[in-house]
Image (cartoon, rainbow, N blue to C red; front, side, top):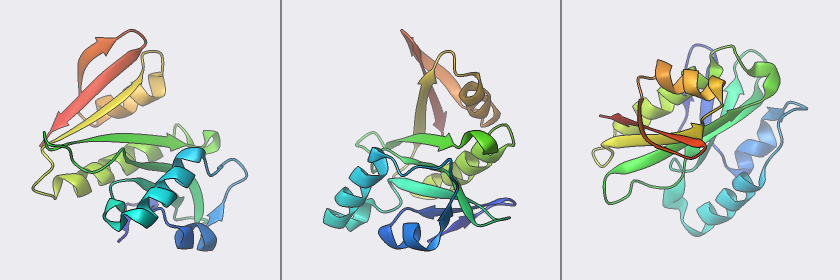
Length: 150
């Protein structure tokens, strides 16, 4: 399973993928990835509903990760999250990657809504979510909540 855009390859994160793809000096495998890899060993149906790697086609390096915080819930909703290394920011990669993974998720009958959240001062994420036509909902203290319905 692999998604492709004009500039990116987006592939589910597995131990095998991490071994064959180069990482930039900036990209670090975080604790969220290690936890996801352990969980997906126990429940292989999580693959696709967890971490995906964002790979720059030009040099075949990981420039970030994106993904869902679990399988669709009882309300047919999934939460998307993403991060791009600083040197690859402000080039449209986050928008391109999130748009593609949203399209993938909406291809499933049991996904009706995608939600996201970001800090209220994270202007880059706010721009990404606005470009994707997500709507702001439920502002809370320092966080903004977003949703997109199918």
